[in-house]
Every structure is written in C-alpha cells, then in structure tokens.
Amino acid sequence: MKYLQTMNRKKLVVGLIYLGLLWFLLVMLVIPNINTVLFVFWQDGQFTLRAFERVLNSTRAMNALRNSFVLAPALSITVGFIGVSLVLITEYFAVKGSKILRLGYMTTLVYGGIILVSGYRFLYGRGGYLTNIFAAINPYFNVNWFEGFWAVLFVMTFATTGNHIIFLRNAMSAVDYQTVEAAKNMGAKQFTILRRIVLPVLIPPLLAVTIFTFMTALTATSAPLLVGGLNFQTINPMILQFSRMAGSRDLAALMAVFLGVATLILVALLSRLEKRGHYLSASKVKTSIVKQKIHNPVVNVLVHVYAYFMFVVYVAPVVLIILFSFTNSATIGRGQLSFSAFTFENYVNVFSRVSSYRPILVSVGFSLAASIAVAVVVIVVCRMITKHKNRLSTVIEYGFMIPWLLPAVLVALGLITTFNQPRWFMMNRVLTGTMIIMVIGYMIIRIPFTLRITRAAFFALDDALEDAARNLGAKSLYTFFRVILPIILPSVLAIFALNFSQLMQDFDMSVFLYHPLNMPLAVQIQTLTEEAAADNTAITFVYAVLMMVVSTVVLYLVYGRGSKVRE
Image 1 (tube, rainbow, N blue to C red):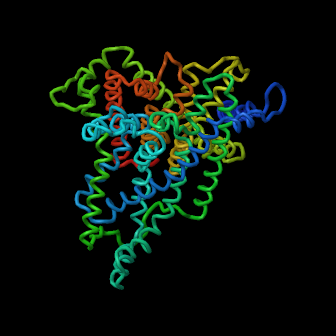
Image 2: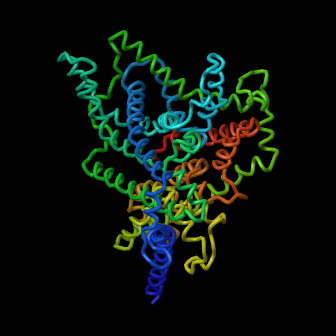
C-alpha cells in the first residue's frame, strides 16, 4: 500500500512537471510566434494582405530588404576570406609571433556587438581619432567617409571572424601531416598542397560558419544603426523603427516574419549539411600538422605584412578604448590622445552617479535573473527527457529548440504583441514594459544553447551511479541533488557564465523590450553613442572597458581552465 502511494506521488509530481513545461512551451515559445503571424494576416476579424501591400509600397521597407540581401553575401565573402587567412596564419604557416597574433585576432571574443561598433565608430567616424589625423593631413578629406554600406561591411567583417578562429582552428587539427609530407616528396608546390589537401578539410566547417555569417548579416542591428547612416538601413533597424509607431507595427511584424522564414531556410540548409557528415569534431589522424615555412621570400614578406596589419586593425580599437577611458572629456572631444590628460575621473563619474551606474546594475540584474532561470528550467527539461523517454518528452525537447530557428527580433515582437494586453494564461497581467518580459526574452534566446550543452552533460552521466543510489534506498530527489547535480555542476556553471556574459552585451532583444526607466547597458551605450558629446563618449569607453573585463574573466573561467564547453 505504501509502495502504491509512493508511486502515485511520483506520477503526480512528474505530471505536474510536464504540465509546467508544456505551459512554458506554449505560452512563451509557441503562442507569441503564432500571434505575430495572426497580427499580420488577421486584422479587424478577417484575413488581410494589407501589410504586404504596405511593405511593397514602402520605399524604406523595400530598401531595407534589399540592403540586407546585399550585405549578407558580401559579408559571407569578406568574413570567409579574412577568417580563413587568419587561421592559416596562426595555425598552418610558420609566421613570426603567431601566438601574439592569435590573441589579437581573438579580441572580438572579448568585446562585440554595440561595444565593438561604437569603438570602430569613434576610431573612424566623424570626429574620430584616425579621421582627425586624416583630416589634418588632407584638409579636403571627407570626415563622413565612414558611413553607409562599406562602413557596415567593414565593422561586421572584423566583428564576426571569431567563429572562424574557433571552428576552423579545431578543423585544422584534422589535417594529416603525413599526407602533406607525401605531397611535398612528390614535388607538389605549397599552393597546390594548400588547395588540394588543407583547404578541403576546412571546407565543411567553413560552409556551416558561412551560413551563420549569412544569418548574422540578415539580423544585423547595431552596425547598420550606428554606422549605416540614412542611406543604408537593414531589416532589423527598420523593424525597430516601425515597431515604435502604432500604425506601422503590422509592417514590423511582417518583416520579422519574413526574417524568420529566411532564417528557417538557412537553418534547414545547415541541418542538411550536418546530416551529410560535414562536421569534424576531433582529429583521428596519425600525425599532427607541423607549421609550414613559406619558401618564396616575397610571399613570406607579404604574408607577414598582412598578418601584422590585420593585428593592428583588430587591436587598435581595444587599445584606444582603454586609453581614452583614462582621458579627460576635453581631450576626447578634440579626438586627440595625450598622456598629460590621463585621469581616473571618468571611472569616478560612472561609479559616483546613479544615472551612470544604474544601467550596469540593470543589466547585471536582468542577466543574472535570466541566466539562473534558464539554467533551472533547462536542467528540469534535460532531467525529464533523459529520465522519461516518451513522445511527450520528445515534443518538449524539440519545442524548446524553437528559439534557435527564429531571429531575436521575431521573438521580441511576439512577446510584445502577445503580452501587451491581459491574457488569461498569464493571470490577466500585462507584461509589455515590465521587467518580467525582459527576463523572459533573455531566457528564450539562451534556451537552445543551454539545452544543447546541458543535455550533452546529462547523457554523459553513468546510469550505474543512480542505480547504486537507488539500491541503497536513496529517493529520486535526494539522488539528483547529491549524486547527479554535483557531476554536471561544472558544465552548468560554465554555461551560466557564458549566458551571463552574452546577455550583458545583448542589444537586439534589449532594444525592443526595455523600459525607459530600466535601460540596459547595451541600449544606454547606443543612446550615448548617438549623442556625440565628449562626456557621453568618456562614459561609453568606461562601459566598454568594464564589459571587456567581464568577458575576459568569463572566457578564462570557461575556456582557460580546461572546460569542454564550446558555443
């Protein structure tokens, strides 16, 4: 009798957990996206294509669509060329100072998004440090040169090569040095070996990273917003503008849906490549690659010049951001650098004024709450899908991967259009404009990555441990907290750190969901960057340095200490 009561209690608990997960899946991930589609095609109680007509008749909207599909292939080409060249410089060719070069090329992993764009804008934009130097040399120099398509392409090219550094560097370990040596003994030239032996190994992961780059270009927000100017705006900034006007929100929703469809097509293409076995996760070769010396002296010099030139391009914004964060506002306003203007005043101003440090606290609060919440939810999901393998757990597993298929802007608009009025499944509460909706948005965009890595940690567990605990009389809950959780905790903490770092820098979701009284750090940086005042620029530099410190610490804790977590 007692056994039956225990079993019924377990079934009740499992049923309640399933019910809670299904509620979260439907309310947060399914209904908002369906509601966005209905918002576009169902108005005033009837089906309509009016939003399509308005988009087709809107010059701004059509230009934004065209610009996005011009930027995407162009960025894929530039990032592909530079990304592959940097990996070859640091991992294949014997280039002097390759370790230092690699650190410079990886600076975009420490700072990115709105911080990176604002740094490049200060360096090359109107009144920027290098622009002032160019103008001093040539009085007729166009100070507005860093604006439009080429500026956006330049910034995003150097902002998105981090994936190449990570994935192609790992793929390089799959190159068999014995094959390279055999080709050399047969008289093959270096370029032939590179083209016929080395590059084919890099092509599979390169195709996958290229698709990600294409998706990044389609969903770009910060770069077009800050350096695109009036003549080059892409889909996301246009969606942002339309969403802020009550009469144009259906246009914003339609463009977001269009962006979602494009993303789904690209994800389907990526999945097809993956099923064809294009991913190389580990080296199974007998001999590791040995760096190759460049025999042609002219080519050797050109490669070294190119390598160090790229190093300067990557490192210059970081160095100048740090230096100018310790420079007084007057010197910053003149776009000059002087060690006589060294001061700690900028940091004192940020940490002594509530209006300056409040965005930091807001971002920390939102990011911390969302990172904890998503960790708890995903742990529960992973426990259910590994412990109870049935159709319902399969539905939940695939359902929680929905955000991976959708751009952040579509998720944000879905939350806005769904929770801008009372809903019975949310206890008749309006969430739009509240702190809760920001945490929900942050959770949603980090769920797929967290689920993918946490699930791998669960599947790596030895079932014998749980069986032994059960045989000793331990209850399921006790076994989970005392046996299972301590084993997966290092992976969970690493994922938590990565989520926290990424959310601290998030702009795409924040700019749609934030409340003016609780402005997150990324949105505050964008606001200060648009207001070209010396004091604002100084504060932006301090924010950037703080974010770089946070990201560096997180990367060290996750990657530098031997963790196997990889995004």
